[in-house]
Image 1 (cartoon, rainbow, N blue to C red):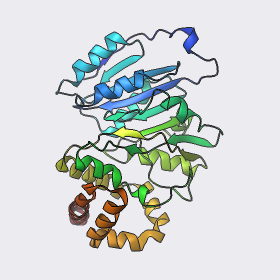
Image 2: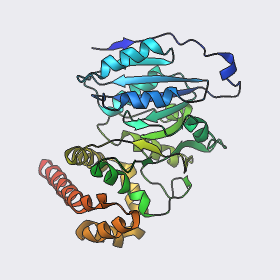
Image 3: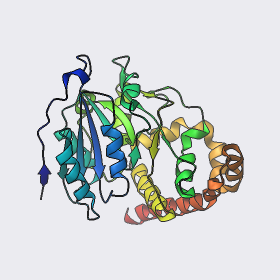
Length: 313
């Protein structure tokens, strides 16, 4: 069953629109997202930019999310939401693309909050060449956030190495869609998102780099990302990522490119208390002491999934 709630978009006042502004579509997926979706949407609606719309694809929320979306649809002509229950995340993104009208698609997680009203303008500066398929940034946190949330941001593997400002096929890293802007025509060019339960986003970015396009990392515009609130949530998220990685050509490419980090990876996996202490001192944050526990759980999950695959084979 497909439910859709469409509000006709009226053009904002002409004084807010520049003729050279590309049309932008924010595409946000929700499922039981009531805790943060209001903050997310308020930060999007606060953007000082004229030509944009907001498309929400909901997976059949039961926690009050739909009531929130309904209220926003009444208050903002920019806002559309559609309900597609029981779909994979890849299918949900594909369905969302079918409802967007923008030249550029902003993929934003429902638990993200944009840091300023100029975030969109600041990100769009990165599209300075036709070779740039997209621009992306990382997540950040507040010191008052729960320690497990701070750890999930701090432990992003890309913080442990210098990130190249331009990511292509030769230095590819798995780039997801938590906070990224991609040219719509290029997503269409590769056939859109695959119907996958995970890693559907890195398959898109990987495919585009294989065609010769690049992704530009934008520092200084990091997004507040509240993607976990408990240890169990973080483990479930890691399990989903590992499942996706085992079936992802993009992740395999990343591991081949990351051979030079093999010694660090060995220490990180088998002696995780060493980087935990080192990074806790570096970041001055005791959240790093989650690292050994999370690392060992991730190893157990990975070994278990690999064993299941071998048994089925």
